[in-house]
Length: 380
Length: 153
Image (tube, rainbow over the protein chains, first blue to last red):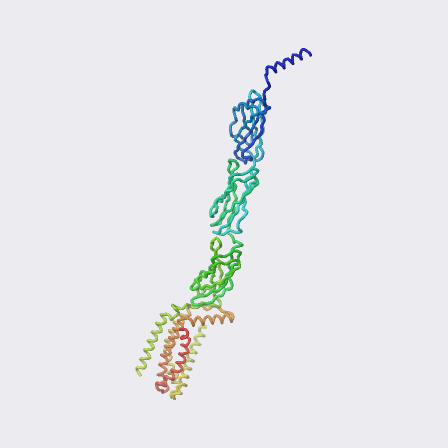
């Protein structure tokens, strides 16, 4: 061995002796896990980012500070300015408040650990997923047509197409010109790819728009989704349809007697069916109103009404009133001819006897003529 | 139309006068009446004077009856029959029709009273025979008028 080589070996040994026993270094610190709450952020959401590190070495490691930085997902909380030592085999968790300021996608804010004594630092990019897909809401059940005052069953389905669960999900119908029962539906937690339905009994008072507002939370962030359901009144294809047929008009004292049949040609029952006459005709006794009652689909019932009409009237309306199961009132009108070969008979006065004026005329004439006859016979 | 009805009414009035006079003349022949037919017709005509007043009241009553009626247009024979039946039924059922009938009967009695005196002097009959001459046809006519009225009452 050359003297130079021997010197180098001796120097290394001396350094080793001066340095003392072996110590753990930055290489022993590893990031064991990271998580965000909520697991998937939406744009603008605020959440927490938790990073856990562990010292896998045999000695403690001195850490100066920990911080998080990056774009797209930014840290709102302050860095950890003085962390201290982390013992051998120990783990430590760092939690940062973050906000998704960027668009959708996966962002990698960087977690930085600065070691003491110029030992460098640890940089660890933490994946954070941002997805802006809201809950979906749809109307899966509603009547063919709405009618004023008629209660309709509306079924609203809320689905969660997001990759994480939503909490505190509720549906609230909003707007004016209607009443809804219940006035809000609570679903609660909705798992990823899950769905739930809410049934509302909605009674419109006028044509309007009903907004079903779905409110839910993603972590601590509240979000809403609206679904607008236009309420336009129309004819229900299943509703009762009373049809008046077999009409027969007969003149009676003081007016007409109308007999006929009323049949329910609809698919729902007509309840509390009444038959009467409308203007310009005036209902008269004995059958001002004819009560039919309930007419089930395809049921038929006869009716009879009496009325008084103008001498010039050629048609009078026969009005059928009925209610649906919710008590809403409907009317249908059928025009009936009273002209042509029929003429109303003049109403007799009082109880059908001679009118008072007529009796007076007869008595006066009788007295006058009787006097004339008596006078003529008296002269002879 | 109205003129035709008026002419028919005038002609009908004269025909009624002549027919009534002839009827009285023929019946009085049974009681050996001696006056001429011309004189019989003259006195019969006097007896129609109360009918003028009766007609005036009848016009008023008829107006009252008919004013509330609208006769519908009827084109086919079936419709005409139906309208006629309805109008007949309506007129028969009207109380003023009964009043008009009673007034007609009263004025007819007045005319009959005049006719009795007329036949008495025109045909030279006794009061009894003159009353029979007038009373038989007039009575039958009055009965024919009152039968529907009695049935209605």
